Length: 98
Image 1 (cartoon, one colour):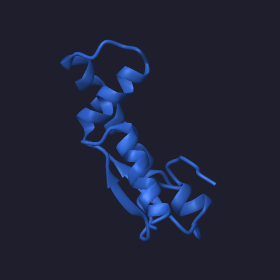
Image 2 (cartoon, one colour; image 1 turned 90 degrees about the vertical axis):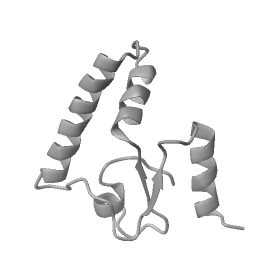
Image 3 (cartoon, helix red, strand yellow; image 1 turned 180 degrees about the horizontal axis):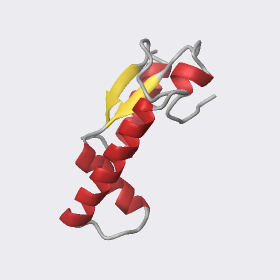
Image 4 (cartoon, one colour; image 1 turned 180 degrees about the vertical axis):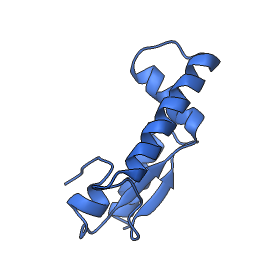
């Protein structure tokens, strides 16, 4: 089972055999989000999206129920410099190291 969410490893599946916590630099996250939405990627728009994502992260980290945080046993992968395919490869290697 593969799931995606901000509280999967800490609340929904705390006993999962493999937990992965994906991170990326704010500018990379913002540009990816804009590209996913088909929006033009310019510096001003990237900064607005960084601000929006930062506010969402802070709100999610500070919420009382199921706050955003990395599970102690989660493997962190910084995807800032990785293509989507490289991200998948890194996760597959963690899931099946043979």
